[in-house]
Amino acid sequence: MENVLLVIGGLFGLFFGGEFLIKGAGRIALRLRVPSLIIGLTIVSVGTSMPELLVSVQAALRGIPEIAVGNVIGSNIANIGLILGIGGVLHAINVKRTLVRREIPMMIGVTALGTLFILDGQLQRLDGLILVAGFVAISGLFYWLAQDARKGGELTDEDPHENIDPAKINVPLELARVGVSIVALFIGSEALINGSTAIARALFIPEFLIGLTMVAVGTSLPELVTTIVASRRGENDILVGNIVGSNIANLLLVLGMTTVIQPFAVTGVGALEIAVMNGFALLLLPFAINNHISFRESALLLGAYTAFVVYSFVAVSGAGVLPA
Image (cartoon, rainbow, N blue to C red; front, side, top):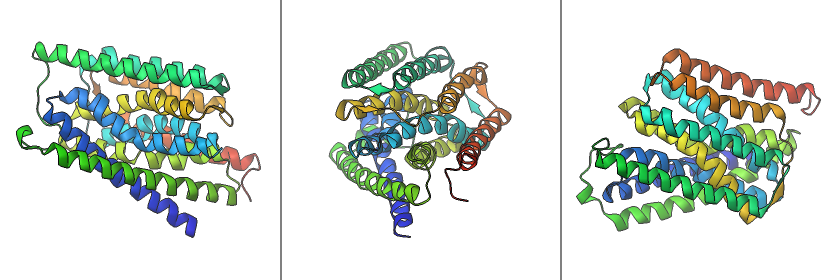
């Protein structure tokens, strides 16, 4: 029961920490006149990826890299299958043409690159530096493209989250909000790691599977909240941009920073998980190619994710890993 309470408390910490971070970072970006699309691709996506970063780093430092890798792979799968699926079921999603032409193919390429590093079996510090450098380069490219589009009149400075005058935003207050959110994320990630690993060991569940499912969904709660809010308000740039940007950030920033801080051997990763992660990334392109993700397509994503999770646990149970 103590470990269950730790997991629940950790999830609450990640949830509210992610919410505070998104709101604070979003308002600071708005005050600095950053376009809404770039907020979704960078500020919001990095903010919602902070739980993954803290959980993965702590897991690697504690000698349980299975949770770190499982968290990254599972979060990328959950972002498209679970979160984008839920968002599209709630409200049909219109996808901006530039996302289909540029950012989604970029996410597919980053997923393939991350796969190569993971399949190598050993993540060295140099690998991490390459991944982080890739994230910095892509973030710079996103910003340059957004500024170029702004000059052409394609982007506006409308607030993607709430109706607020940018001139009235208190930057020191929002910086304080960001600081509090980071503390909440740290405490939440600590509790989630402690509770989930203890439960996994007690039930003889592989730590990689816990990272792939429970921890991945827990650290994806900020993306889920952002997606539900954006879907209800019809803010498709933020909705899809957040998912695409978060998947890029997970593989380049989260996996990269984790490896820079603590290089580790990759264990527990099967061909199925790698194939599903790449499959969901590839599937997003034909679904969005007509600039629209329908209810049926979203339901298919959600159903495929559910089937993947159920199969993962059934397969482990069938292999005799779980107690009868």
